[in-house]
Structure formats: C-alpha cells, structure tokens
Image: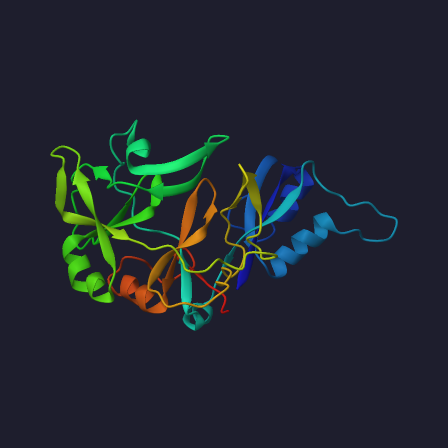
Length: 276
C-alpha cells in the first residue's frame, strides 16, 4: 500500500525553486498552489524542508498557509490478489438521471433529512428513467445523483447474475409507465454484520440527527465485517457522506465484473477489505 500526500501553500519564490527541482506532477507557481506526491524520497525531502526544525533553536521556514494531508492510498496487485472481499468504488458509468427530476426522491426513496443531509435512506419503489441507449458491449450503468445503485442489461443479469441467486428490481420507463424490457436494477441486500470501523482510518464522521455518517475517504484497507457471512454483494449497514452506503463484493463477484470489463482491477475501482 502506497500513501499519497497533498501539499498546499502560498508558495514564495524560494519555495517554487526548491519544489520544481523535483519531478512533480506539475510545475509549481508562486502564490496559492497544490500538488500531491507518493510516499518516498521526494515526499520525505519536501516534508523535511517545510515541517521539521533544523535545530533546537531554529524556526520552521514555512510558506503562508502551508498544509500537508494524506489524501489516498494505492494498493499493489499482490494486495488486491490476497483480498477475499472489496469495497466497490464505482457502480457503473453514470447514465442519465432518475425521474421525475424534481420529485423522484419522494417517490422512490424514504429517508429523514437533517441539515440538508439524508439519513436512514431506503428504497420503497422502482426507479423511473428515460430508456437508455446502450453502448456497444456495455452491460451496466449507474445514475447521476444516486450512484450507489447498480443497473444491468437484463440479458446479462439472466445469464450471469441470476445463477448466483441474486434478485432484481424492475426499472420503469418514465414515458410509458411500464417496466423496461432490457434494464434491471440489481437488488443488493444489506450486510448481515456491522463493519469494524472503530479506531480505523475510516472512523471520521459527522453526527447527523443522532446517526453517524462516515466520511468518504480511501486511506487504508477497508475495515472488515465484525462477523463473517457468505455473500456475493451487499450494502454496508453504515451510511457514508450524505446517506450513501458502500457496496462490498466477494472475490468471485469481482472476477465476474473484471472479466466482463465492467470494472478495472486497480485501486480506482476496488479497495481491498481487511480479513476478520
């Protein structure tokens, strides 16, 4: 696992000269600017320059508003291979919006709202959408605004997903008020166990009406379930950033998605889960 750090400040002339002596992702300019680097020799030199004292009596020569933050991690092929479960970072390429645009939340979802944030979100009816135009070889998609729901071509579901025992929810054609013939929503069950979030890198949250909503961040392996159970795909019981749950998949289900080019086998799409 490689950590990546963000540096930000109002850089001075001498800072710019120092920073641009490294092979960074961009050319740094005077004034407010930011960049990120992977942990290693370059990170250590920059951190040493702006964050540590040279002696007991010397001051840190920092530019104004200097800030360094760990922003994400990248996992190796070996770490991905060794995992039995993954947090799925993407549920498909966004394709359109749920309808009716101004009222779909009240029709499709039940939830409470506090400080403009949804909590305890549950689906109570089928999504209504415009009939999608499928790209060549495309097998699934997600919706703008509601990206934690997965939609598949019905033929792919019947041939590949139904044999796994997975169920589906009809998707309604908003123009005809009838179920779409070539689209289904995957019916993803809720996990049978809570996640061991306490004291993990993911244990950062804001209380919303008495409910913990954990921040969206990928700073470590995803925490394991407290109790083991068998599944191909499930939602976390816990809510993250605005009422969205995380989708967890098994290695078998991951292999299916990769094989059919629905996701790619890298950190951008998968976060390995720690074993129990």
